[in-house]
Amino acid sequence: MQASTKDQWLMIVNPNAGVKKGTRDWPKIQEILKEEGVDFSCRFTERKNHAVHLAAEGIAGGFRNLCVVGGDGTLNEVLNGIMMAGEVTPAEITIGMVPVGTGNDWCRMFDIPFDYLKAIRVLKRKKTFLQDAGKVTYYHHEDPQVRFFMNVAGMGYDALVAKKTNILKEKGRGGPLTYMYFVFSSLFQYRFLDAVIDVDGRTAFKGELFSMNVGICRFNGGGMMQVPNAVADDGMLDVTLIRKTSKWMVVRYARKLFDGSLIDLPIVNTYRGENIRIRSTGKIFLETDGESLGHTPFIFEIIPRCLTIVTGK
Image (tube, rainbow, N blue to C red; front, side, top):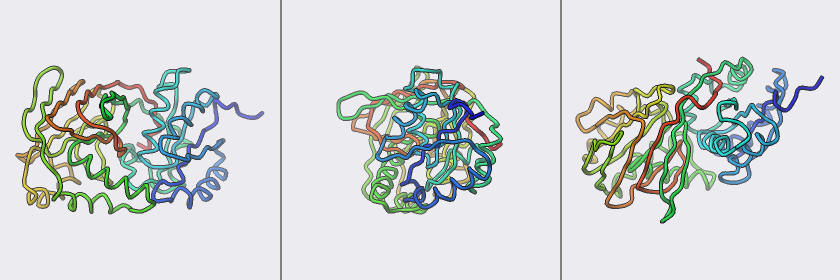
């Protein structure tokens, strides 16, 4: 008896992930899926934000297991497709991942291996975990927009570096070290902006901002740990804010981005809350899960334990 669509995995494949690694490695991944006896169908993304629609269409067609074959950006698109689908609640959809992106930071949080065979065996085991999601309202030109995220959102300098990295990706260039290259090379063009940050209705910060992250999970930027205390199911947003500082300080302490000790520096503030509001005198830009979006003002909200994800832990 053939399994129902509801029992199958819908593999949403981004051929351009990992600088076209998705194209090169899909035949190998597909062969492993077959050898491991995974029942699946597949769809391929053809343009930016296509995975949003593929996920929503898959759910409307009866799929309840969605697996991303791509990177953090593709995962973010699939999440937004799940959140816009009206047939079922988000928690009724199981989300898995076979990582082929350049950063794969969400996978680091949940011990999903970068080795394809091991990642597919994690998928088969289907051990699940309910994690939180974040919702951010922002502006594109003069129009308010909404985006959901499940890893980390970045603002200020973080968003500038992500934007430069993404421009290269769209041209089919770049790689794992591209992000770090722009971390240093962009220092000479960045301008600080005044910001007011409210956490759960109280003003927590007023002043010039260098960079800021709001996290559900801990990793971004290809293994950096800028929100090291984030817990994925605690119903809270973790915030790491770097105040105005010198270029030399950024270079000197860059290594602290990777071990979580960044938050011990005197130029860093940390907060936790369910609602974060950010206003600024000029436009502060935003990225969520590595995807470049719009600008201030921002409203961040937490949606507790609403996503069923396959974990390797």
